[in-house]
Length: 120
Image (cartoon, rainbow, N blue to C red; front, side, top):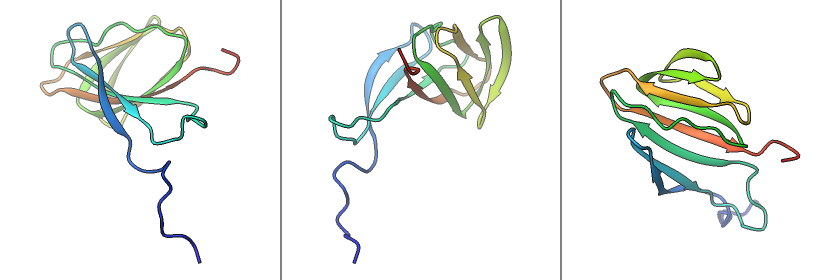
């Protein structure tokens, strides 16, 4: 018979305030429920960008995926632009500059998943 006792290293992720964008809004980092001896190969954050503002231009070693939860904005990455809306997903290779400007009337809410590529 399977155990009905939940594993200690499973469950909801909790979030803590990490930092604030210069003008856009707060960023919260997930505290994943995995044991420190066997951490996940990725990290998670959630963040918001207020209407008429942008998040900070971001460039880093990690690869990153943005999942837009609500709102709309103009994404700039490398030398390209695109419009993102709720439900859209964008992926960024390591060291590619990226930023989004909230063009809508409501806060833009997003979730980021990021990790270091193999060998880094």
